[in-house]
Image 1: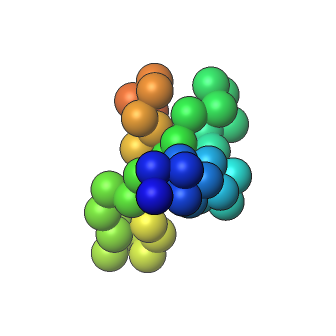
Image 2 (image 1 turned 45 degrees about the horizontal axis):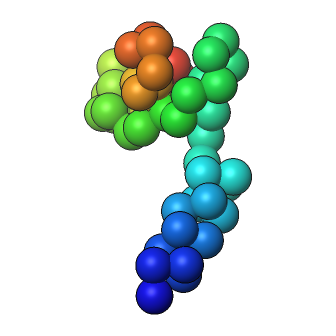
Image 3 (image 1 turned 135 degrees about the vertical axis):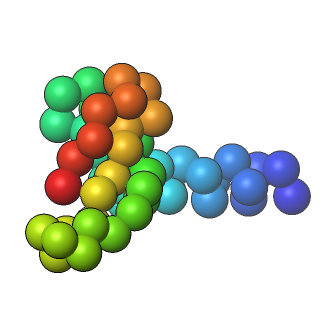
Length: 50
């Protein structure tokens, strides 16, 4: 069972959005209604990306 969980996590990392600067994983932060864009934050460096 633990092997399946590890495999699932590795596959998920491949398909997630990555930070252009450091290669960390970007997580959804919020929707900006003024500019009509989604804002993501890098888990590694903390930068915000649109």
